[in-house]
Image (cartoon, rainbow, N blue to C red; front, side, top):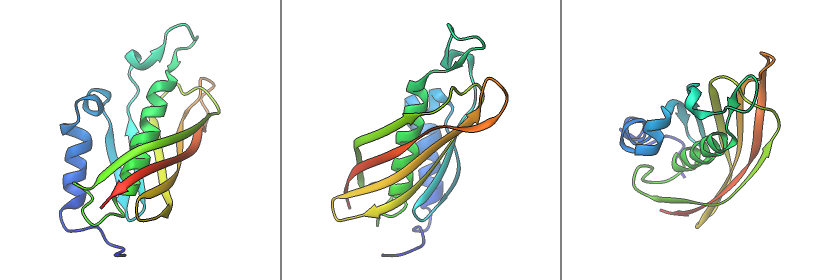
Length: 148
């Protein structure tokens, strides 16, 4: 298994994440970093993503879960022969919501195991809490089907 991404893959993956996927584009997802088996994505704070009932408003957990799924998928893509076109589908995302997020979200994922038809990634999302502290607000593990 190669430890480097194929030439051009980082640019193509960035375009896919930031521009070509309508939902991710609407969320403003930005690819911060990728390397073999790891990824880092961010979603900038936007009031439209908040639970308005909370005071101060906090990011809806559905947005956090989306970031977890996408960050895990991207990390797994980096381990595939064709990271842009090979199939990666979530089978299960186990998420533990630890704190409310009230600022930009940053997701980190690392592949812990890859087999012929599946892969597993650990995923963490960080944000500033309503109290202003930078904390892990969610953590979990994703199992993805792969077909490369």
